[in-house]
Length: 95
Length: 359
Image 1: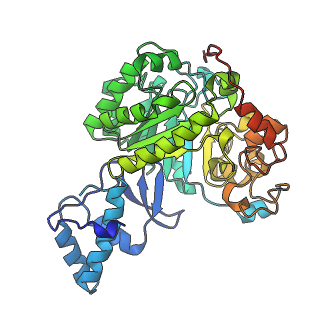
Image 2 (image 1 turned 90 degrees about the horizontal axis):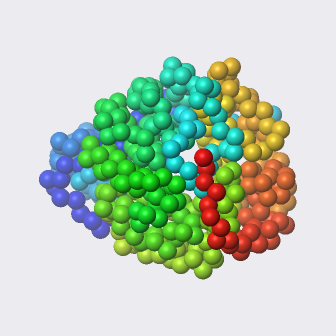
Image 3 (image 1 turned 90 degrees about the vertical axis):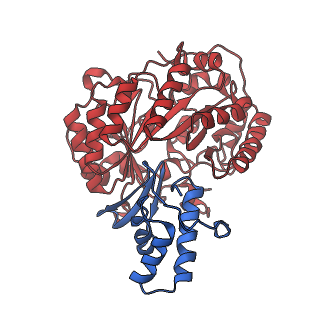
């Protein structure tokens, strides 16, 4: 659904206050915590979300991930668009 | 033991900091016998509990009450939850938390705030809360929280007196710049049972409200998240109460008793352990109350052979006890329960009696 929503290249995605990525030993991994919601964040999601600082642009984040993981840029672009689009729709990310 | 083998790690902790509250809501969910101020846990004990909770796997803590603002050490308590690494949520009526305290809470690292609204109409809202001026004070606190940059959830408790105004209440939440709305129909436990006839909406009202909520959700998609809980008495299937008994969450009362859910004390014969005597990990794994209804092995038919057994865990134990006298029974909210007629009958009883306020 949200794949249809393009994200502007110069958008600076940011987790708002009230949405936090945290590591919990007992739960065995990274979790994205939000109001009344807990999402288990897989390794890819963690790499994407750690870069959503409000400083890096969407374009830089995609470039950075493509370079770091030596993956095709189009695929990374699609993955990041999907994750961030979903989170923005749930009001868990500011674009 | 099967219960130990299937032990999960809790995700959430409801911290009832106090049972004191300035409001008198007729559907109050706190127990009939409130715990006294002198018995409340102190600041340091709460800090220890939060540390133990984080170690146990708890990710989110909900600071609640009564009205948590009645605690003078609320800011220190919130700070200690945050220091333990917990996602810290304040559940407040909005009355009793001064705006300067709100700022201190923000500085202490509070993650989120949930404010309850009784109605979109100020006069009706104050009438329901049994407190003159409550509406205006809630409004002010919610506005201050948003101004500080906190995410706000507005909690709308729905019953016969306000069910026709869900749209207007959602508009109010939007005007307050809430990011999330929780529409919760009154649940009939504790004090709410005293007012059931006065609070119970009609089936037509419930159906209209469900359609309205769906339409509102579509209309505001992307602007605000609307979570709605189906009203128990008008449902076909029961709710998976607290996500399964002793499975995902714990509740610590003002005096330190640890309960599987906030209404668990209504079930007679359960032995609750206290954080003053045991560690939270010990309580989670071994307290008799937590093990009383863990898993699904104890469930009778129709649950025993039901494919929803691991979805709703037979529903709510407290409700099963309140309505049938047997805490192990299938929650009578389920249309398959032999006692379902009872619930259907109660849902039809409406009495325009004055509220019995909680005082």
